Length: 135
Length: 125
Image (cartoon, rainbow over all chains, first blue to last red; front, top):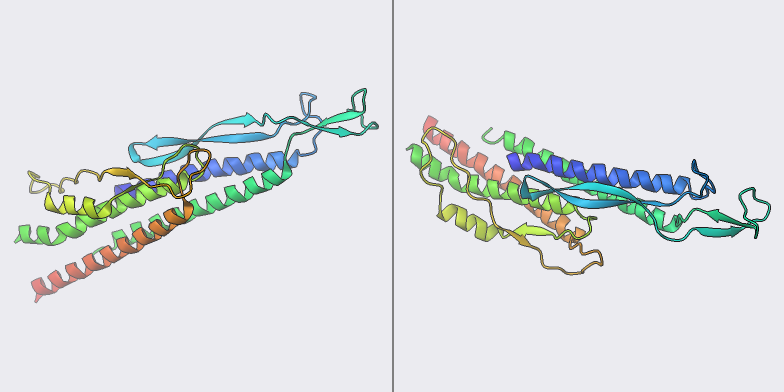
């Protein structure tokens, strides 16, 4: 009974983590063409880092986002001599966002989120059935 | 008489306990499907139930709740398709096991409810 209640914590932590991943994907996709940001430089793609978080016993392992890192892949160089951000050779430094990768990341995050919602719903159904034992 | 009732319900009590523990383990596996380095875990339900039923908790106070049996040993799931990041969660397997465990849990509750109804019928005549 009590361990079923912990499913809520575990699935909830995973949903929070996946939602954060989805957030980062949205921000990457939105800034896929931002040639300059608040620091004057091209936007850098960001990725979340997941890690296991023990919630009491070993069987209660939730998920935690330990950090958001910047994608180390090189920035795209676009030849656009008329662009105000172009260097002396006519190249503009564009974000290193890989749109295809981000779309895949988005689908993966959304499916993982759905999985956890279902886990949570199942645990809820089981708890309600447990409460009706003997009736 | 109360002891007999206890014995009657003990099996389902232990089984439900282990089922809910297993549900917890499987939920953790599903939650960590994208965590690098996470190893999928599970319990050997048959062995754990046999151990829980054959060694019932002793020395419990007569009025208090029965002492919870020791939690089942956590094992690691054998890998079918290893992934580069060291994660061994196979979502198909986990979902199937999760559904199986859910059905068994519900079946257990149904059986327990029927057993209680039978006893009630016997008591009330």
